[in-house]
Length: 77
Image (cartoon, rainbow, N blue to C red; front, side, top):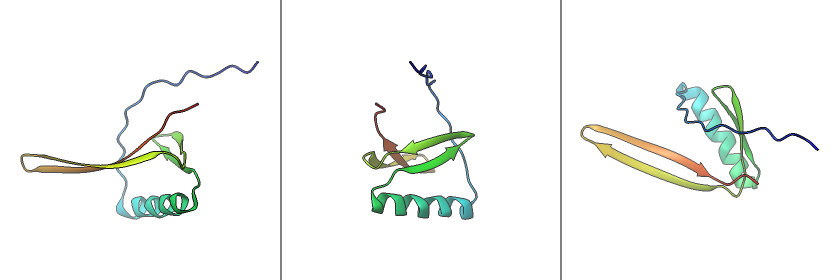
């Protein structure tokens, strides 16, 4: 029987240069349109976002600061 690796909790935020970020957005859009999983590496860890993931957009405003987040949520089997 294969050993299952325990997945640890993680909360990482990674900033990208505009050119690199737009390339990731283009790849993501193509995958979403074709119903394929989107794979991305974030801070050295590869993440596979399945095509059935729920996608949400969040906008926060606090004082003079604003933030927009795109979020993908799914459950692993």
